[in-house]
Length: 200
Image (cartoon, rainbow, N blue to C red):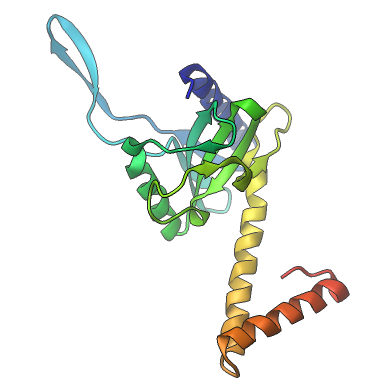
């Protein structure tokens, strides 16, 4: 990752977050690695004293927590997460388990685009596979802002649909096998879409 482009991407995100706060949409702060100055050999050195949190954390209007880890890459189609950042991956998973939004937000330099990756849709084990560009939700810039907040609406919608499907299968399974319930639910979803425009 180019450090300059990575820093510029974080500046863009920080500017976006200030605008979110101004508009009453969210309060999101940049996290910094805890460090201390140590003197040695006549020079002062800044040394990290703890593990880095995800790059950003905060709360959305309405009270839901959010954690973001920002990445920038010159790779065209995939991004392997560095091994020394495994603790951030675990942190995002833990945040998700407690009901927070938890994402990787990646700037793909070759495509000049930003994509959002929900930790809930990534493997449970760190490093199993890289982030693939096409798997992320594309963020559409708005008014010069990296408006990732607008992109999470589909994530909520997908999660609501997933829960609705699971609940429906559970109810139907009291009368038939799970495989039969899944088959009937597919038929029901087709009817709902054709007749009412409802996508399940």
